[in-house]
Length: 496
Image 1 (spheres, rainbow, N blue to C red):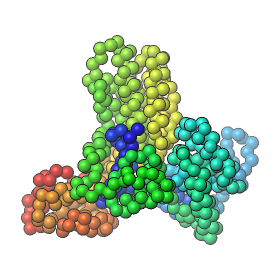
Image 2: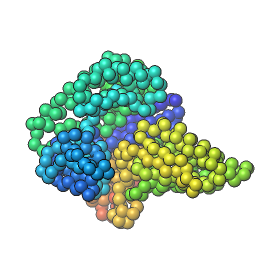
Image 3: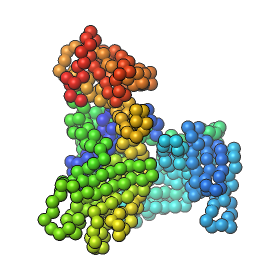
Image 4: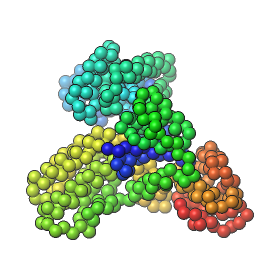
């Protein structure tokens, strides 16, 4: 499989795209305005313990209190003996200090989900403090390689530090894995020292920011091409390749053309499609993908498909095509939680089994954890997918005030990226580089006050002078340009 990675740094956000055999397979967005917390370790204070909910709420010093299910408490000193096997009794009380790690980002009005079972991820391994466990990623299929890596793990493991071998460790030497282990052990000892000396609530370990975290997971010997349009990220990728002794240094390219990288590679066009709920298939059939607060629902429709066979055979053909596309869309759109897929009805149990096996096969390409059940007699397949971050819709859009959150508009950061694209195109066609930029007052304030660095960057990178004008008549997801000494709208003169 030919794998390529494209990394583009825009105004207010960094985008990472992965292509497999020339087709977009993954998209990741890292926004400067949104701080990543998954993997962070905090020293928190227990605010409430609610046995009826089998959970506690912990103040970690960030927004709403974090949610700690009793099932996520691994420390034996915090668990009491229980006569009722269905419930967990814990030795937690209000005001108690406790070290926890974020496993799910806060979302809407919900606080972060946390655990007391700490884990610190490195390049090739994950260490699990206070554990005897040694394991190898289930996604590694070669039994002889699994056996080799497990032996290495037992040889280097020290008392009280469990090890999980990551998929990217496949083929790596004992020395590479040992170095990773030593670095993680040192990091763990340092953070525990910080925890002892700190006053709760406080952050004691900041995991990698999203761009570094994603690149750590994506870059391997299997990558044939890496294209980066910023000097900082180019150096970041070079460092990863050097540290991991990867033989792909010739594969990295520093993109310096004026045309935006994602526009040049037509990745932006693919991202726009991900905001639509209808996905067309080659056969003429289509999917409807609806994300709700409770679950994700995918409906398979025959659409324009005109089959030449019997209804059952036609249904099987559409469903097989749909299964591949559904797996692809779940990965691209970062959809998670409970997912229901309503396939076209088939009477044959054998055919339903074929669709189930096809889904399982396609989902093996996904780095997120998934669980899939067989298709029910109603033609519905139920599955769950691990939440790895915000969905692409939540990342690229925000609730619309006009419709009270029912519809959505592009986010402030995405609007700034579009303005940057417009300026790049404008500069190639015009010599008058003094402009007025009209924005909704809220967006203007965001650019000038909260993203002052981005405002300066817009002018500096494009060598233009920008005077920002507040205009309440302009919607929050739009902008308007005029020349500095003119009132004529020139926005539509340049393609965006």
